[in-house]
Length: 130
Image (cartoon, rainbow, N blue to C red):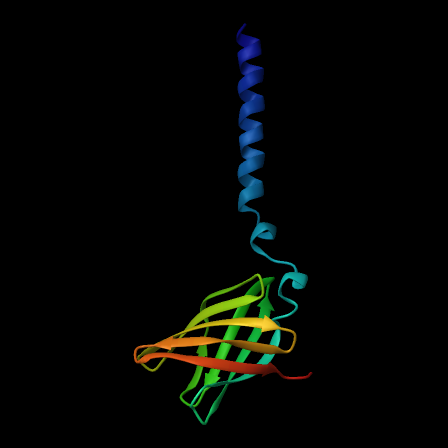
């Protein structure tokens, strides 16, 4: 009876260890290029009613989606960056102002909104050709 229990516990612990290692594997946190293919690259965008443009750069770093925002006040790293169902969302902090962006990607075009402390504005943009 003791041998059966030992074998059962060994099998149970082995199974749990494999499940844990699989869940924590770096491969699970890295996304394939295909998932982000529509987004990757450099985008030039403009908010409605504003005369200047800003640049969004999306890239993979060690298989993880990253982004950089460049506007009239400088360059910032994108935080909370997600891309699901053709929708990109991210936050940037410029000086002391937080900007929350949400946009839908449709081919080489994007459209969405930026939310800031003063309200919201519609944005549109185009993907720059390589």
